[in-house]
Length: 268
Length: 293
Image (cartoon, rainbow over all chains, first blue to last red; front, side):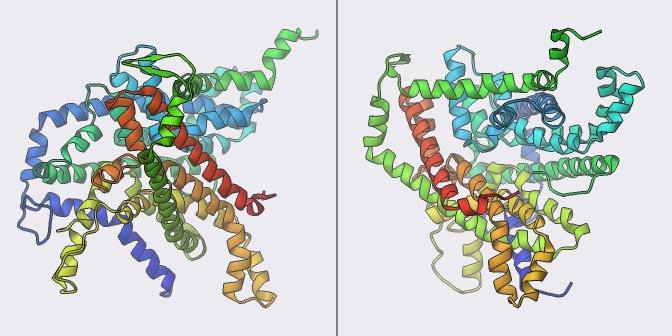
């Protein structure tokens, strides 16, 4: 490909996209306590602080509990919705799907405040459980988007063949459909996990006295002394999410290859 | 041997569809529709100290809307969101165009992957990194003073511009993907036809590519504009808390001051303003959306 101004622009755009992320390890390994150039020297102290930090460990544990639960719940709800949406016609379908997909475009503060108001009204104490409820609501539309692709590339005749061969509805689902959409399920689960792990404002509103990882990060950003450790934490998170994403992408592609669909690219 | 009406009913596609979707639908009704309805109801209720009195009143709305500070914050939120949307979409369009028209088909998904990676890394930390970049002793000022371009570091934080750049970065993939999808759908022979009929490249782009890409551009505008207005973190971190947006005051009313009816009225007001702006935008662009299939 010959050089073009468009390619040059694309390169600059990638610099814009990646600059904040590339800077994380730069300051995470820098021995200066102030986040500024010029850099001082190489150190692993911030990572040592990070792994010795018990509050952080607790926040991470909470976040993992929430993210795993959210991932399972929203993927399960997503499977029902994607199966219904791709396989059946029923009256009012656009409205029903519209309601379910609404959190995708609703400002997060609206989700957070409406859930907060209703949970307090019914007297449910704020805890990790209420955060899971909120995160599941937010992650389900993303799960459906991923699963829709998996379910809509299913060949209906495979299912009919199974019925003709005497399988029941449930055994057909278990033996034919589930294996074909498993890659979609895995990538949906990983995506919901990532969304939940990173979500701040709903957790901030619904966690009560509990702390999640983003809540902890937000509380520490006010203290300049803690910033280098946050940079180290950010570096770890970037590495972790790249690994997760690459895994999700691998399964998404394998799923497409399995059902013989054309790769249309992208997660969303 | 005719099947009983009940059996036929149970086997009908509509019933199966509803059964299948019911868990997700019930969840959405309980945790989305009901809370939204409650929020609307609260906005018309009266605030008693620590309790909400279910007495109909419009006082919350008149209190919110007659408050010059709330009006200023709401106006600022709309301006910032509009600015962010403009910057994000204008920056994103060439990228979507580049990937769709200039990247070989086999490498397209790799490019999309490359663009979505930053989006999946910690939002809070990404926002904070812009503070690191734009700070008084931050990355940009270090470069500028290091190269001797300026002696006085620029004051860039705590401004609407800084908030806009940060949010434009955060929402980049949301703008690129819908535009990319609509560009992919364009029949390439239309472009050849345009060129064959004597239009130059620029005119072909202007009269064929751009109108056909408009549904994607409009989608991108919606998906960036609507969530941006409810952002809490960026005004707090990048605006230094001195330039609050509507999410910050809603949060304050609901959790800190604990005036739930007023907070609800503010949340509903913000949502109505967002919806009004979004509908106006859709109306102005209706000719691009008509009959697109």
